[in-house]
Length: 219
Image 1 (cartoon, one colour):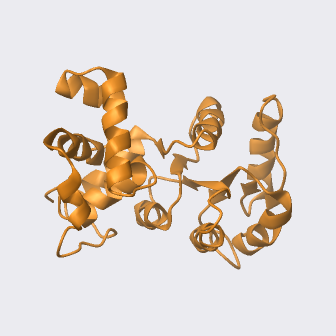
Image 2 (cartoon, rainbow, N blue to C red):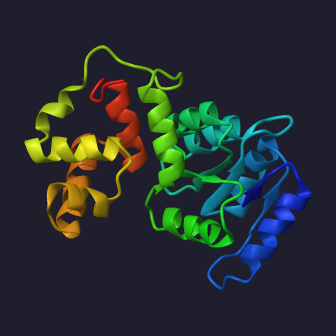
């Protein structure tokens, strides 16, 4: 589903995606309220969601769509379309459970890859945007809330898993973590899976949020 208040933007996305044999546009919406109304019938796997729209913005729509799917867990994945000027929206989108974010001026192939990545169940962590967000928060920027006492699940992590969590919080990919720890990428993938499972986190994005909210990474 394409959700953007600018018809020309949606038309551009449609031109890019219509040529992909494994991607079908099942619906389009001009604002968040329309998106919420269309989701039950259209049943999209992935939603490309703009942030600033009339009537209802993309964050409000994302919250409503993801909260309505709490029980089944089989609902759509949401990719937030953003710009570098909208850091505060990215913070909130991460906390709401969006599967990732993509710059509006990203290359066409990145848009296609983003859809496939989140459809496969992975989080979309654009390195440039992720590290900007992390850097802003680490230097005192607003957005993520801090909690006083880390949850008890942290005690279930091994030393290596804790180390992997810290590297995830810096926005590193599996390959970069493997290089940092001098381990195989498949091994790192297992560690990441263990971390997410033990901390009851959905994906890498939630791991980043978790680490900063729980004071595991210094400002």
